[in-house]
Image (tube, rainbow, N blue to C red; front, top):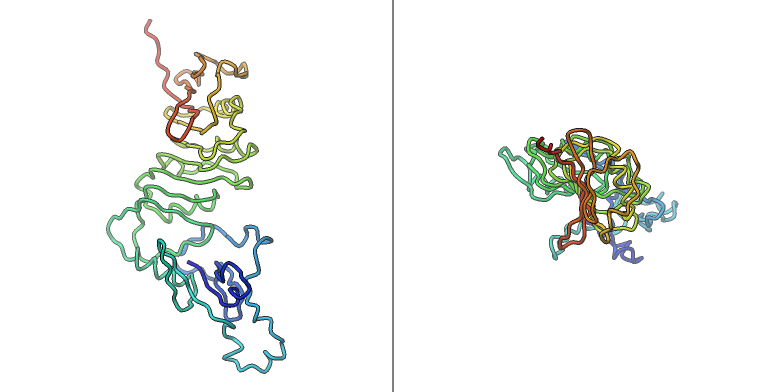
Length: 312
């Protein structure tokens, strides 16, 4: 959904389409002024790279103040050019008389999802760094796969207000920007069968990925060079005790001979070969490290398994 503004089309800005609502004088409306009952703020897009954003203000707003002084009130406080709402559905575009985008989004979501009393399921759901215009009266859906976009603690804290948390997520997907909130434990990580990190962040934030508890974590697309530091991956994973069943899968460029790794003496290596390594984790568990090949590439898998005692 975009706002088409005649004045911006005249100066060639994104073909006249902008992402922001405007007030009667052509100014962008502050997002906090648009919050309505049951709306959920999951980010603040206005704080992202403000210095690189183009000027969306209506050029006609900068008319000579003397002209404004003698304008009739109905002209002085009206939009200075034609505005429309453009709604894109699949490959089709629909244009409507201008109204505030946040009001139209609220109406659409209420039409589609409002006043639901029975159980209902959403297969895929994603949110942006903005405001979710959720219906006032509706039952929270069961969501199978949820993409929160860029990780933030605010988004993680909002999930319970959006979804029916009595049913586990199949997959919780996110990406981790170079500048991000510190990733901390959250019940929603354990509530998901899989947590997928859809990018491979810079090495400076890599160790943060192992601070939260989750059942299965997948780090994918695209593989980056710093993940060739297998020693660091293993050391960070082994720094804390992991419950049995925890599994991490990391997309890499190619396999590496595990017998060539230089590991700290504190790690108890039970078994090692070119493609597989087993390390002790306490008296009841071992960590198995091995490679696998799929249609998407080569994966380095780390999994905590129960230690099977040998018969006397």
